Amino acid sequence: MNSPVRAFNAVGGTPRFIRSASGAWLTDVDGNEYVDLICSWGPMLLGHAHPEVQARVAEAIARGTSYGAPTEPEVELAEEIAARAPVERVRFVSSGTEATMSAIRLARGFTGRDVVVKFAGCYHGHVDALLASAGSGLATFAVPGTPGVPASSTELTLVLPYNDRAAVERVFAEYADRIACLITEAAPGNMGVVPPEAGFNRFLAETCARHGALFVSDEVMTGFRASRQGQWGLDGAVEGWRPDLMTFGKVMGGGFPAAAFGGRADVMSRLAPEGPVYQAGTLSGNPIATTAGLATLRLATDEVYAHLDRAADTIKVAASDALTRAGVAHVVQSTGTMFSIFFTPGVDGRVRDFDDASTTDSAAYAAFFHAMLDAGVYLPPSAYEAWFLSAAHDDRAVSTVLDALPGAARAAAAA
Ligand code: PMP
Image (tube, rainbow, N blue to C red; front, side, top):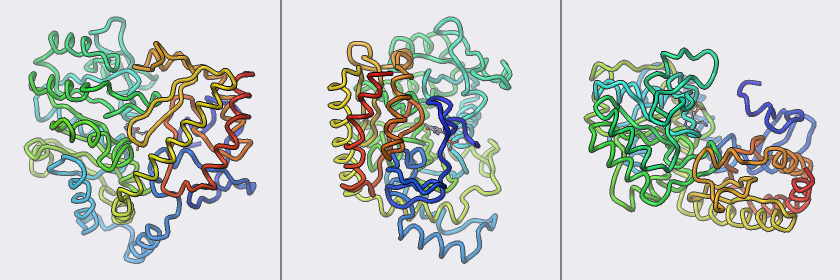
């Protein structure tokens, strides 16, 4: 098992080993088929093995798989990203982890400051400084969230409750001239979907600007998924502000290892070789990965997002109905086309932050998950994840999900 949540550790049971995938469907090594509601944890926006993406990739592979020199697809992919997101320059890396790690290094190099602010429940990859849990008090420095990370790696990280303006104001009042950046998921999806309250991201951008810190918006999950322009398309584009730096991954790699960070030209120009902040990668901007990402983004039209919206609505409503009928307390939350279902009554019917999300009934979710799996629907094997759909989730796939829901809801009620 090469990444923990795949191991079904949160839901129990034996993970399915997948042999192939096509459209909305996964086939395991025993020949069982499942409607895929993970979509590789986000990337497969168009569905699996999209014929046009496959064709572009096959052509690219025929030209060789990596050159260690600049190529056209990486320039075109950077242009495609900059056409959707407010970034003046883009640097490619191979994973979301590298993107956030590099973005905070750049923010520290640019500002000459060391402190990083993040929110509890936001995941930014397995970067030492960001695998941090809140310390004993609110405005105190963090402790490592895992063995293997030295205390010295998180002692410059402040962890705050999400959606809490007062907490943000307090740390900026206390540490303002030491804060290099605040990093946040543009809309958290790694504690289940917890949308920013109206104006929260703008407030963060303005607070950072007022104190000379950079606002880093992590759109690895939401980018080109929550909407055509990611989460920024739902708030910043409407309200008229932009992050200083952004990170991307998942959809923009079309199912290959590709990710990116980008933003203000004056900040990005501090990167090597133009500037002094070092950052590099043997496979960065790999021609196969950038070709797949480019083909994916070019095919991700307004119709794709409209389809995702409709399919998400159908599944959300049916899941909520089934759970209500079975008497299972739950909260449905979404941002754009992304959604998740929390198995908790929430706090005042909502989940605003990680503490609220932590009231989830994991046993009820595990029972629900396994009943869905037995009925041919592959949900995320964790109660704290978004459910991902694709353009290939057609009526047959959606009705397989709808048929499975009532029985799974009863299983959750009995757990
Ligand atoms: N940031 C966010 C918001 C993510 O969701 C993830 C991955 N789930 C990452 C960063 C890390 O990306 P990767 O797994 O590609 O390192």
